[in-house]
Image (cartoon, rainbow, N blue to C red; front, side, top):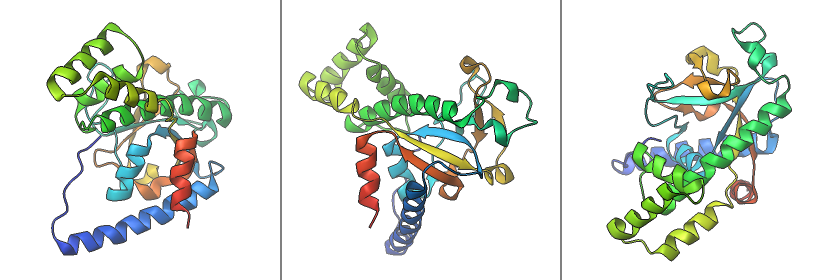
Length: 236
């Protein structure tokens, strides 16, 4: 995830407030709409931290680093495509046959992302730092020798107590993430690429180095109570 830029003067702050209001109104609209949308080309799982970033900056951040092993660039945003939206796309026979299955697996991904984003932010670390994201992912996966090594470093190098870390990991379990549906107008501005090799062609990725503009979100569904409560506060 990208680092958050600082505001530069009162004029920019006023503009930022106007932009934030526009983003908030759109998110309320797609929250109330849900995921039922014929304009949707697929589903992406994300976190409240990414949504909060989008509220501030107007776009959803993609991956914060490239990965030569899997062959994707910085700014890639992965999603499960709707088969009906890509009838002639190469490899579409590997896509989920129905939307329910695609949404189900998107929720699994959102749950993972939601936990580790929460952990990184709660520890006061940088979500734009790939090493910090990796740390959050390991801690979010539960007990392991590597997780114990990370906890020891957090205690000795960052002054965290074991109880503080334990509380953060406990609270992270409450996060279930957010499922968003992607509008077909994405295809007018962004190229698509192959998805994660480990998923046998079931997913695709949007190449968006500058992030994905909020207007490309056509629907939204919170996957857990924490997320529902957050979006309810946006509804006036």
